[in-house]
Length: 274
Length: 274
Image 1 (spheres, rainbow over the protein chains, first blue to last red):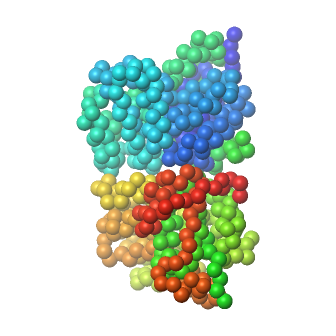
Image 2: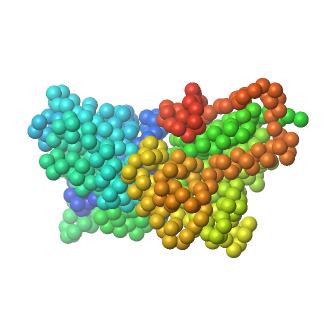
Image 3: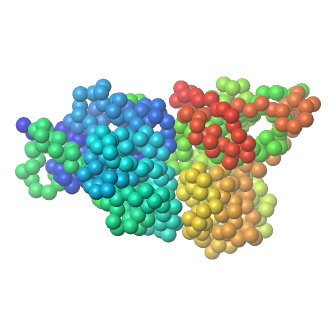
């Protein structure tokens, strides 16, 4: 009954490794194939049309790797393109929006939810739509924070400038009295301290990487798709493969901060061929 | 004797409009065709191979517009790809490195020159090579400032956080006692105040956009290639056309800060076809 095919995960770059970290933590026996589109990152400021084109190519590449499940770890692609594309495939796939929205609805007490993300994610209004699908009475306040991604990639996760920019971006979230804030971009997990400082301890933060891994676990269990072949051995025994769309140096350099462990090598592919 | 074909200018995005502004100021009678590769911006963090591929496509597009001269306004493309590619074309073309390097050599008194730019520009060492071609005795200190581009695009040109980051990046330039600093990225022209604050008034800043327009003026004059057909009329009479590789909204929104005037419309093209 075991399905030892890999779980495919893709992202516009390195941010999806925070999702991968949670998948490995929760499903250590699973094989994982990761694709980071570092040659065309970031997706967050681009148009719906371009993002949809890129996302389709990313999924086509993973399909060729014979994966059993596809995780779109990129909030931008999840928000803008995934719903349309997923209808063309029989392979199950999920984005980060639904699990994040669901968690926020369960957590909020006062019914005021904040969402932060890239410009494309926020403009898509995808989180608000998902949240309102569950409960139309909830209030959702959305805000783009375009500088957070480059600051994380530059290692500016605990500098004074980052705290200033976070307070600058987030002060309107205080005025509307949210009690729950969705980090609608995988990079933002590395800014939890900074965001908590700006928002105060009472605001609950929702991390999409944590939430999506729970839902993938559930899906594989419900559908008898877990890789039980390697379960006999202790510890994380799944195989992990990493692919990127530009030279892998920057990706492997950044990887340890996002994944929590080193990546020894990543294979470069030409994504424009897919 | 007039050559009324346009001057072609390209950049990885919107930054090259600072060069375009100087070209229009100095050569108001010239027709200009601008291409901004906003669908694949930024080039600065990518590999030499990808940047060369993109630059070749940008030039091929401009060649189809029947231009008489091509300006590579992107420091990254100028540093990494232009020399190799320009050998394949008879149309004259110039990048921003040589004019910026030449100006720095003329300005420095103590022989210590600083250069700041994107990661790809700095890693290429292109400014140091050009400066040493002119005078091998000069000392060149290079530094990548990857957050400056997103901060400019986000309008963070005079916020406290920007001043902090600039001081953070630039403090090593004080230690080596430079007297001249090359702004090796067109976006940095919008951070002149911030950079001057971090470096002090005594440091001379060199702007590539200003320097390249002087050298283009000289080239057109020396080769009888000026557009004298429109010189009879007063004021800036040249025609300007703008092309981009994604939806033009963000480009036209940002344009006025870079160009100094509004752009009413920009035409989208599919650069991957070139």
